[in-house]
Image (cartoon, rainbow, N blue to C red; front, side):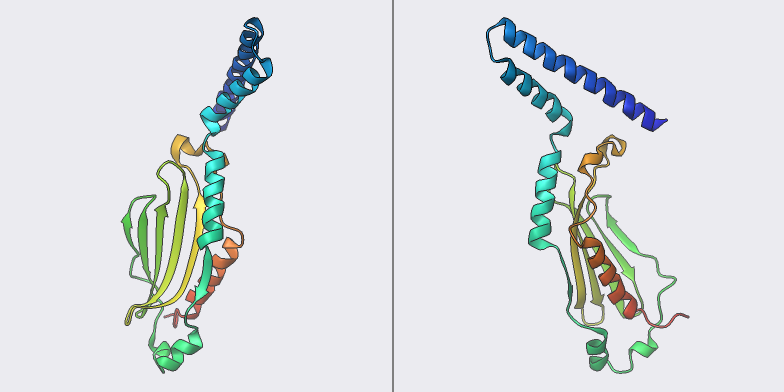
Length: 196
């Protein structure tokens, strides 16, 4: 039902836009002005009322993806085991400690206890207040000595305003972002410890 409502509203907006463009062209012709300029100008204005944020969102997302996104492993399981002999065998995968969430939907940190020794930390923040682009960072940390073992940074875009109607601002991941998330998850899984 809500989809039908969206289609009706979009159809009405399209009709109003067509009427505005035709009206601008008519005005230009009556007053000896360029009908082409007035027509395209009113079309751009009607487009911009709703879609003004599409191009800036794509540009900001692409800029930060190229500049900052990535996946890094600072210490492998073998390296960690050589520095901490016998410890991995004593670790048990967490099944009872709940995650700690601080912040709101757009700017938050989430700490997930992996086992007695490791935490997975997710940090999300909105980059620009008027655009729906978010930075996501995941860190895998040895809590005993606060060593950073792996990190993944990505960017996405979503707009919850208008009930998610602004689908054109939704960009899931940077190029290769899903693979980087999977790789990060694989690193975390290696350090989980025994299932008990």
